[in-house]
Amino acid sequence: MTLRALLVLVGLAVFAAFHFEWLPYRPVVGRIYVTFPESVDIEVGAPVVYHGVEVGRVERKGLRQASATGPASVELTLAFETEGLVLRRDDEFAVEGAGILGTPHIRVLVAEELSPELPDGSRVAGVPSLRTRVSDSAGDFLRRAGESARDTGQRWYESLAGESAESDAPHSRQGDDPPKSQP
Image (tube, rainbow, N blue to C red; front, top):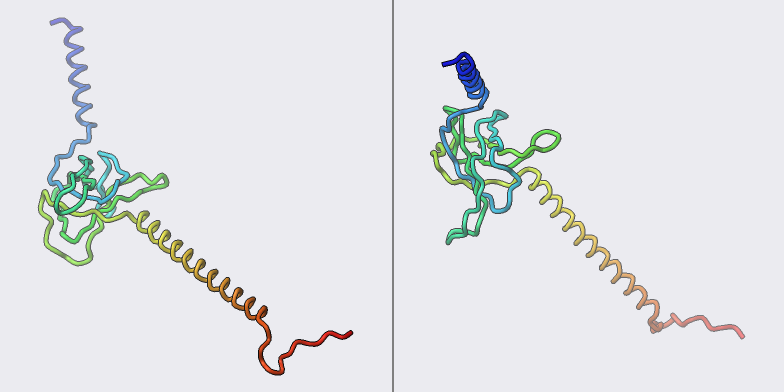
């Protein structure tokens, strides 16, 4: 073997060693399937965050077909890479944004009370994100405010119409004769 071939092989070996060292490989220790009733703004590879710590990634995003138990939904497969992580049945999963740009991630909303463990491979329902909940609440508030303003305007209009009708009615009470004009 020539010196040139030997140097090429050593270079490839060093390149491979550094490449695999820098490759962020963590074995998957568990999976959870989270379904959302509507489209979710998240991509495959997005992080899963538990108490502010990244514990996994979105492994797959797909459509779950409608069945007898419910309509079609979006299903995310979450792959957990942290050994010893205990998820509970009452924990909730929400799509939220982080940072100035709002980079989407899955946030595990930890239940306050301890409930039984969530077994590997479980299916759970996702909850709307904080942004969705706030925008839905704001939309409900604006809808109710609009209805209230419309009702108030209608009552005001009806009261004006009633006053106008009373002022146009002939005077029928005694002693309420209209003033006579002077010749």
